[in-house]
Length: 174
Image 1 (cartoon, helix red, strand yellow):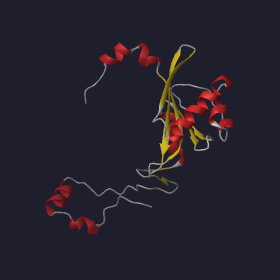
Image 2 (cartoon, helix red, strand yellow; image 1 turned 60 degrees about the vertical axis):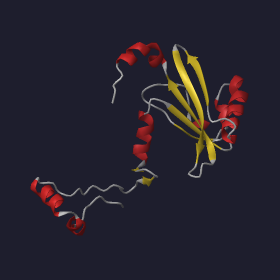
Image 3 (cartoon, one colour; image 1 turned 135 degrees about the horizontal axis):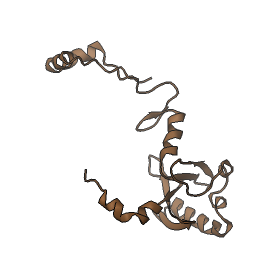
Image 4 (tube, one colour; image 1 turned 90 degrees about the vertical axis):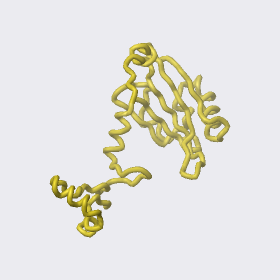
């Protein structure tokens, strides 16, 4: 477990002015545990299974990941916008077979181009009913920059496209 507790020894090493100021204002050292039991360690964080699943559900997009062998290993569902219908039966299936038969060869070709590094990514736009959908297919790389798979990101862009002028008026300059 990793802890954010500041020990008495560490506190004594800080400049007196800082310690004095902290004590005068009633500030006590933080004792929050950064890594908790059940957390997985990532390069930038510590999260548990519930937090990871909640994060993916909160994203306004859907993600499908297939490994180098084109086998689907992961997909997300979100609570905000729906793109394509997916079920657990796609896990383990080849990526191209998760699409309508008329698109299988195209998806296989694109996945191979992205996984082989031939193209940095591919982007497509389509419609599902009245919804305008953006599909981005991009390589997934390990820490060494080697391509280990491909991710398909599906976003419902209908509101952005249909309300572009309203969105432009609401842009905040930060």
